[in-house]
Amino acid sequence: MILGMVRGTVYSTINHPFYDNRRLLLVDRIRPDGSEEGGYLLAIDSVDAGVGDLVLMIDEGNSARQIVDEDNAPIRSIIIGIVDEIQWTG
Amino acid sequence: MHLGRVVGTVVPCVVYQGLKGVPMLLVEPLDKHAKPKGDPFVAADSTGMAGPGEFIYYEASREAALTLDPWFVPVDHAIVGIVDGATREGEEIRP
Image (tube, rainbow over all chains, first blue to last red; front, side, top):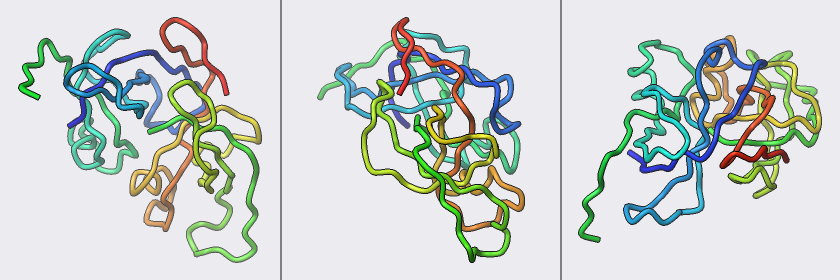
């Protein structure tokens, strides 16, 4: 799973039907110490995350489909948790 | 899933069955600030409505094929939607 920091949102009305009424969040990939890796993901929110939240994401289809409970959902990037605290011996 | 910008179209004269009539567009990948980063690639357009210059978002691998009908087709990138607006730290971002 991937650590990320929610930085923004994306609004869209013309999209694949599955993405209707789903919040799209712009999430920077970060290292455990909070520094940015440079990459990012546009992820569907499933836990009411908001801008500024430290989140846990998955970027893999089978898990994502399991979460949304739809066999052929064209989805990979999804936010599955909001992180309270990271303890890192790094 | 990532942000992209449509920079062209591709019209195949012969294509694998199941992909007939599927629009193929040239997409330039964008970074987290919606600025170009990386080489353009060809993506199937599942919305069927994206045109050159449009701000879009796309998915890769099997999930790209799953956006199409029939979905068991050899596609590894697909436009999933057209961006109406995107914000980053309170500021609008555009390609």
